[in-house]
Length: 399
Ligand SMILES: C[S@@+](CC[C@H](N)C(=O)[O-])C[C@H]1O[C@@H](n2cnc3c(N)ncnc32)[C@H](O)[C@@H]1O
Image (cartoon, protein in one colour):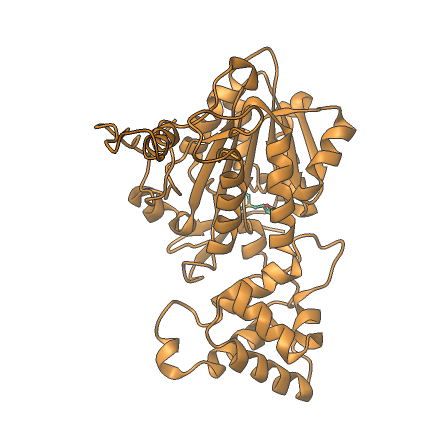
């Protein structure tokens, strides 16, 4: 297997950038793949995780999506007392990561696991709680660029798309065995594909002639089934179909929905989690999982928090943070990233953990209750804390 380095126009994300790239084979050692994957929002991730990993004699960080270990290597370099637990469902990624992280072998555990298995992995390794967790979701450049794995619509390959090639159904099985209705649902829900029904019909017609086994054939079929004017907008016409099949094959959203609360549960007080999402479905799940922890569960009209009903986390990101223009220009994969982060509050410090904005809202609500005699709110609302990169406008806090 060769080493593939980006050259010319490169993109590693089928969601937002066309898969136009030029590759140059520069070697043959599988273990020397490092340098080909540029970790997204690396400095911001390190900045957010640092306060949790810098404390104490030994801290524990989980990289739930190890990939080629770009983020993991940087964490290990910056934090000499941090133990890393790296998970990936892709055995090939783990093999590369193992070589890349060899110099840190005495404080690294690499595990072949789906990230929703994190609690079992931690129990087996003897770590009841952790200080940092990073999810860098989606596919790695290793998977996307591999000529034989079928993730990319821009190159012909068998329709596999399994991140874990040791188990599960392939995209070929999905495409050739799902009913029209099931296919249309997958394409509509996971690909947000407007022409899901038409594409599903074309797939069903085509497979009656002969099974669809290659990514190029599927990509062409999708292109042909989309009306000509729609082909000219929104990137390659097959990108949404490939995204949808990949999500279905790897049961990505179900795993994420289970993994996020499980990981939050494992964070010790002061522990921090950072999530990088690359499409709206992932980001929505992340937003919901964090919102559930940062919100008070007590009655909204009480000026004080009832015991045990307060938030257990505080947001560290202001809405969803985006990558800056310079990073996107250098690494097109960063174009679609959305970063969200949160810190677990310490219940022993006595603070409710409420944000200034939430305290303000409670005070206003309490003042407007009948019988309080006041309709005037505080004159100053806490201003937003500036985010690091470009951000969306939802509520959140800076570090
Ligand atoms: C974008 S890459 C991570 C890149 C990594 N941060 C780096 O700097 O090299 C995502 C990785 O997560 C893995 N992955 C995706 N879904 C997973 C899941 N449910 N469980 C475990 N690993 C998963 C993929 O196999 C892939 O290697």
